[in-house]
Length: 587
Image (cartoon, rainbow, N blue to C red):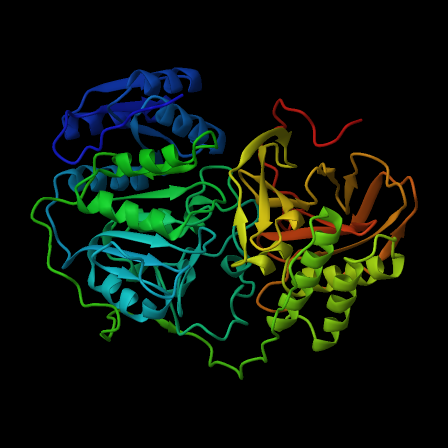
């Protein structure tokens, strides 16, 4: 279906305020304070229908935090996209006083004038130089200047980079919820949080290239657009509300609303530039979220405006140019210094000859490239270059090589234990990503799995399939055409039920995600006999705090796959009953 949307850049008719379930009373009062019409909804279906009925206009949904889970949020976003609704949501915390403060700030923000010295700031971590277009754009080489401008304050900020909801990389800096006095109290059993938020190590403490870590107090902006993975996670997500940076900013003195994705995503640097232009011309936040979701085509709509969807840069905001990238200005506020850099490791050059058209041969070359990149990153010793050479030589042969498969499986186990389960990230910078497509499958947590292809630009026949859970992120890395196994998580073991028997047997290993450069023990490589249909691995028993991932690597007949799912100290992060949908295997 084609939807035509006109960009709203000036005053428009006030949109509807929808009060869902237990938030209806507070929403009615909030609608009166904003001078907007109000409608209560009692059921999820009634709420979705009310959003659809607001076609072509803004709609502001206020709902109890626990009711606004990932499933409902996704359905609202997709309904808003289908009906061109400039949607905003505001999850109200269960504490009445906290909810009242949030609503009071929302009401005051609707009529507030400009207060920051800069109009817009745009940062992209995926380019060293600024992205052409935005008037105040910064790349990773000018991250110092961006942080300085951010601390000074801007009416709207677009941040495009890696993140997980609690911390975001900004070149030589990190925006981290734990870095200042606005950090949350430590997590306790039953909550969803990162290890560092429960007394464990920082996941970045081994990284030596960061200059400083900055907390929520460094983000001084009225409007914020986070083009990053899982930058806002609704109820039932991997992180609880109080452990997320963007959600914490709403409780502070500066941020009035933000746009963020609820799941893993991929976007080009040009996306951030387009978003900055929208904001600079006066588009409201609800319009920004809608326009980003329209770019996803038939994929899931994952970007959500959290806060009043009619918020925009106020009239009279600064239009003077901020200092250009390259101009050094000391940032105000406190920042936690990063560790002193260690001596740089020696880079290992990656050199591949033009790849073959045969997919199996091409994937052997991709395996060789992954090994070389792991050595270049310092994650594996230079001795592993011999394995990379053998894998490249195997691309010229079609005969099975059980010894080579064993060595590859051993390499994968060591990589899982030292770096983590996203082995495909070693290909970053040299691959493209296909559009996501629905699969009809469900991940262990009960949420939907999407599939995309990771395609090496110079070796398209060596593409890999990546299955992504809308809640948990990366779930399975497979050869194209492969089916993901069904995971069964018990008190002490994880079992993968394979979609079909292994024709010639295979090898497997497993490891828990390492934190802060502290390697985890890898399961010794074990053999699977021909005809095997399941893999069972033991779970860690130390009860380490916070969210971790466990991954199983399987190598069979020259192909590898990696399967991962999140764990907490109580072993499972499943929060929703399994929903209707084809299971992840064929009985």
